[in-house]
Image (cartoon, rainbow, N blue to C red; front, side):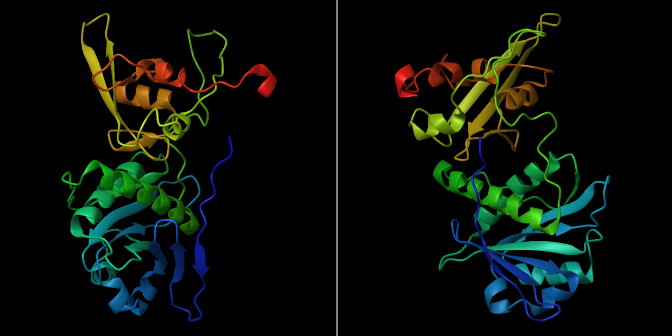
Length: 285
């Protein structure tokens, strides 16, 4: 399965300390890659507004990269304070604002900060340092769905800085039906994105899963949210594989996400929903 391309307009600076700018037109996001020396050159009229940022420490092979996620209603001023008093020994930063007339408001940047921190915390090559968290849970579902797409764009922009964004350990790129250990794996057509495209699932839908421990009798419970990207978010972290999302949510070594996840409040599994997808006739393939 091919990975969708995310395009950005790149503006290369002419001065020695001017920041490199990336414009993501799809989400109307304006980002800059900064050194500590280039913070002062930011246009205050443009950048002293609500936004989020990621401070990046030294990147070295085989070692975790220290990062810190933050947000401010006056982004340039906050970055200048981090130059004077660094919360971590950072050498690069990514700053993000909304390139629209309205821009971000404080609740939105609080949500993005929390979601971005959750994503980075789960990456094996990242050591996350957190300051005060202003997570906002008052935003409506449709607004959180749009902001989730922004988070994925910001993660992609961090790759340009050189930050390793390997997925959470053991996450598979494609989904397989898994029965018992040692059994043959059968690949089944259909993805979460296919269910979204067909209107069978919607971004923001909730999923539930449970598993009873036969020894202790304890029942483990997990919840997931369907994202517009076709991923499932569990405990603040997005997963491309339903089975990986299931094992992380239930804290179990293995599981079949298509059969384990059910639409919240129902007995309908993801596998049941996948069966509703139109299957072409053999002679139409």
